[in-house]
Length: 398
Image 1: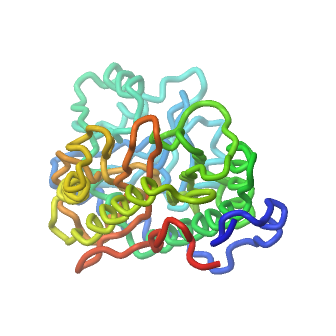
Image 2 (image 1 turned 135 degrees about the horizontal axis):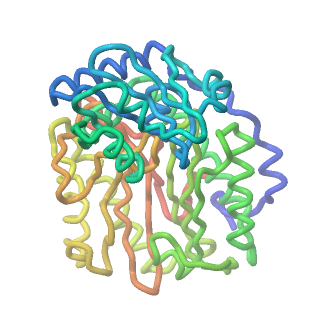
C-alpha cells in the first residue's frame, strides 16, 4: 500500500510515540470561580434560589471533581446568593478534599442517612436541578422538601458550558491533535487480515502513549459493508484488499474530548467510493462555510443536506443519504448542547464547538463519514484539525 496506508506495524508505530510535548494548561481556580458567577447571573435572570449539580461532567466543570454519578449523592449546591457547598458521603471526605479545585464548604452524610435532608435543610424556596441528575434523586428531594419548587436547570448548565473559554479551546485542540496523530499511525498498521479488535487495541495504546487521560475514550473501527451502519455492526471483521475503512475515535485531555472520523480505502477505490467521498467532502465544507455568529444551529444542518439532495441523496433522513444530524456540541461531554440539527434554533456564538460530520450511507453497501470539529469565531468558524483532503491520501503525502 502507499500514501500512508499500510506498510508498518503496531510495534513500530508505538515505538515512535512519546507523551505530548506541548501540553495545554489546566483550568485555573479563577476560571472555575468565574463559571460559578456566570451560573449565578443566569439563575438571577430565571428567579432561581440555587442549582444542584450532580457528579459528572458539570460537577467537573465547576469544581474540578472528576467523579461519575453513583447511587450515593455527591453534588454541588450553588446558591444564587451565599456560599456554595458540597454534599458528600462522610467516608469519601478525604478523596473529595484531594479532588476539589475550588474552596467550598462540605456537608457530609452517613451511609444510613438520606442526603436529601441536606438539600431540604438549606431552606431554599426554588431549586434547579442539573439535567443529568437521576430521577431518583429528584424524587427523594421532593419527599424531603415537599414545598420546594424543583425546576429544570438545563438553561443554567447549558448557558455556562456551551461557549468555551480560550483555556478550554486549548485543551480541546490538544486532544484533537493527539487523536489525529493516532489516526495517521493507525492507517499505517493496516494489512490484509488485520482485525478490527487489533486496530482498536492499537488506537487505545497509542492514545495512552501520547498521554490521553485514559487511552481511547471510545473507538469504532469498521471495514467494508460495516461502514454502512453509522455505529457499526457487532462482531469482529478482518480487513480485505479494496475494503473501505472507517475509523471514528477520540480521547480526553483533562476531561475535554476529541472525536475524529477518517474514511479511506485499503487498496483501490471504486468509482462509487470516489463519487460519494467527494459529495461528503463538499457537504462538510459547505456546513463549515455557513457558520457565522447569529446563524441558527439548524441552518448548518440544512446547508449540508442541500448539498446531498442536489446529488439525489435523501431528502431528509431517507437513504441513501444522511441518517442523522450534521453535528453535535462537544466539550467535557462528547455530545452536548447545542446541536446542528433541525429544530435547534440556538444562535451560533463565539466559543461554541461542534463536530461536522454529514455522513452519507448507502444501505448494505458502504458509508462515508468525514468528521472534524470547529469552534465559532467572531467572523465564522475555525477548524481544530484540518479535514481529510483526499480519499487516496487521507493524511497527505507520506
